[in-house]
Image 1 (tube, rainbow, N blue to C red):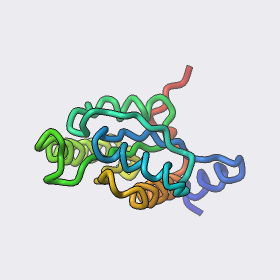
Image 2: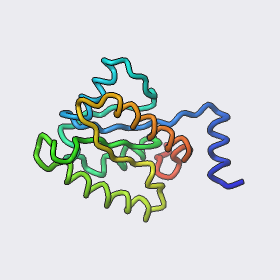
Image 3: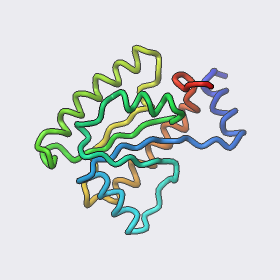
Image 4: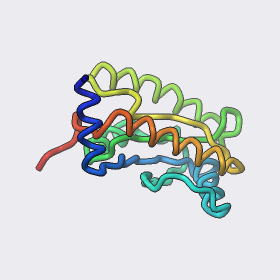
Length: 151
């Protein structure tokens, strides 16, 4: 049995559920999450939404801080390419977070803990599916123990 599987089994025995910090673009992804809620589409309760003006304005340090403060995973979601309210903010975000995932891997942190996706304002069902997928992937990784600050 691998160490990862042992951590997962221990977490499951304790009733552990992953906590996901979710950074959503105000114009598309946040509106998609709102549509999912208004439409009563069920999705996991494990996320904590942080509304931002544009996914391109998110500093990667925010993602590290979320992981440091106890989040087991992070989801960043913005407008589809070509639909950004700020013209190219989502393209800036895509480049920024591709490099950030490489940095995580170099630091020995599972890059799967940080996910990036596109969700438009009319895709409430897609938002719910993305959240479900991210929660399931982070659940497989087990609790985040590498960056968490201890007091």
